[in-house]
Length: 211
Length: 211
DNA sequence: GTCTATAAGCAGATAGAC
DNA sequence: GTCTATCTGCTTATAGAC
Image (cartoon, rainbow over all chains, first blue to last red; front, top):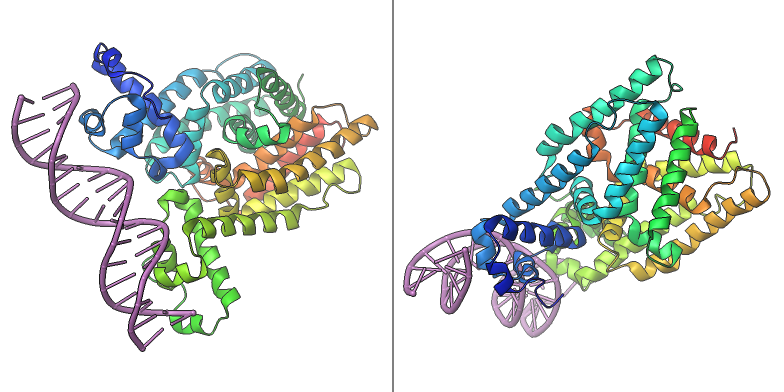
């Protein structure tokens, strides 16, 4: 925590894009761990291996950096989740959806958590982008579920709450991982995520009555 | 937001306990909305209708107030959730558990959210109390599920992940309510919570194969 | 218990030399 | 682009009169 992760000699060889990516990566970690107000740009800069004033050359305000962090988080998430619901048998689509979302929680825990923090606080700084970029995707997913129900391909459940449930269960393996670790008395392993996937899939598939 | 919720004349009539409760109630709201660092004791005091210095007479440090807030949140939650798993048919116990947890999310959204914020941030200020007061309760619940499985009263699922799933789904109706409201294009109503309860219960009961 | 006054530090942001 | 230096405002917390 005290030493910069990248020394300035090595950094000097990087181009602007790569340096910005390093700053954003460090910012994601810190915003997730300490929240927006709990994170100072001075500490982000320190951990990323440059001065605060230099960081502010690339990101003129703290809010601009935060917006960029959330933009990148959404880009990554949308790229992984896009078109999952487009085709295939309901059971396969649901399994793939659960698997992809859980994989994101496992591989990008800081991204999941910084997004969760923003939503829990009422999405005061990022509500518009959530409305424009996330909500349409979720609504489309709900419509896919409703289409299956109308076609008799799955049992008639509440499609909206089914999606909320899938979202909640998978998201919690990033957000509530600290509490889960306390219950298990150890950090979550790959095996835990696999078991979680099986359990969640079982619940969802049993509820919609397909194998 | 600009005017104190309780004028000082009325407050003067209250005893110390009641005034502390007012301060804590306001602090819960603000910590949930703005996080620990995002909330200043000056604004808590302002909204509670007393001066910052006067607030610090009752709570000598910001951390002390925060600890008290989380203590009260846990007290309230444990009181509502205690002994739910003690007796009864698995299906009834599970339904009651889901109902109680969801009711807590609906009636005490700020409590749920301030707790979630603390956990997501790694429980840096409150990890010990979570370990001492929450984890034993969760472990006991898991043991109850495992007892049912051993006795053949429910299907053999992963009891730990089943509990994590129930926790996640019910908790999210407080934490992710802002995002749900964006998807629904309106605030959550009582009816939404009832439908959520039905959907969650259906998933859990179908997974453990009891009606 | 409540008030006025203030200390001491850190935050985000800016100016200008090189 | 990176540096030194600095400004301004807000934060928690304290001191002491009443």
